[in-house]
Image (cartoon, rainbow, N blue to C red; front, side):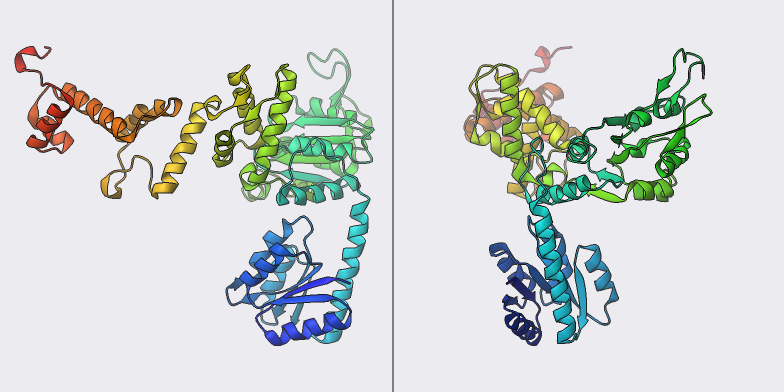
Length: 488
């Protein structure tokens, strides 16, 4: 017995599919809109989803990215009109299992449903026996669970794999984990940093060289490709590989054979290739910066890693893991974390991803020293300032330090404001009234100094009337320098 959901605004189709499902002893529910379907999916799990493309409140295909992030997404069968071939294409690209054209016969629907359920059952049986060891990877978010499923597929195969993701997302860690869970775990994991390869030494580094092949080659040496024999060759930042070597490397991938520099004999290496990049290789191909044939070779499988800002649920477990690790490393007692500390971490966008988070946590632990708890004061000032500014912007709906009437301040005013308010994030705040008064007094004192006490200039710059200006002088006990007392 399977659980089936039908999302279609045509009630007749919903009733037909529900009737078919009931005859086959399946449990069926239906929804007539995208929003209603979302609510049902959020509260219940389903094996099969029949999904219409055109719904009253949106396009059914917009639901596909959300579904693929689920820990156990349903098999999706798209219902599309005959005049909508693009809908079928987008559906399959988005991860749909199959699609049906409206109207379809009961027999055709039954066959498609039967195949989808058989596929799902076999997939479940296969997943139960995977036993992927991911103890070094922290994450329980839906996006990470989707990555773990792809990792399991990659570990079971020997196909070339491309891992993509922003800097700091852990591409090498994922590649090592796949290697350790694969049949090649007994072999070496050899890392090649393509960004550090120089054109003059790249062939020697990858293919090795024979004694006397070039000046300085006093001994024969095996290249990294040979060291990866029966193991995994990891090309880190493959997008940085010089064009001059890409053609030679293409042959290595195809034949798994190469010739060391200065040698005439061919050598072989039975390696599994995993490549990683933070660049868009498809765009590089269009711009002539990367060979299309090499891209096809290295992307039998793809594993895209999400940035940390797209999986905020993982920030706390990652931070807790790193804190415990550092406390053990430095011989400290386990530290607790203040609620405001957590809140600040979760509000920061983490452009450097997990690597940046770990660096920030280490700085906080070092700053706290023997203190038993981590507070926001232990975080870097610049991080706290950025989070504070973003909070103010969200609450006010405008940029921090924006001018009156929503005008954008000039760069000079912005810089002055940032310098004046820089230190308030490191100290207990006074009352708003005291803070405004102190700021106003500082402004007036500096205004008088810069204008040399010239009333017309003071009034022009400040925008104050004469009477208001003198009232503020009296309020704050400020005096004007006389012409005779002004510094020359």
